[in-house]
Image (cartoon, rainbow, N blue to C red; front, side, top):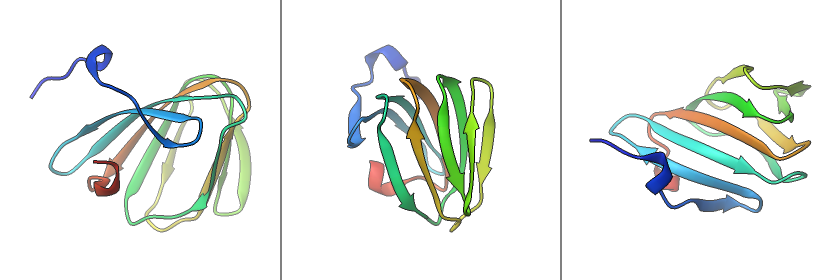
Length: 105
């Protein structure tokens, strides 16, 4: 399969989080555009997640520890670890999930 990111219609999964989503048999990619101040509440899931900050500053709490992440930063989130985040300015993020994030289909 082949995709063009410019042709994928974004979905607002959480208020302020607009994602262009790509799913394979074992992986989901979420290319997020996040509005300044938008928050994702603390949650956890069975998926391993890798978050890459492409643009902006993103405050992220993982397992009770809060840090601000900048372009080029990558965070690996193990399955079932509680995490939350907030965009300190408009952000672009890439999340990779394994296995596929079925609820995002």
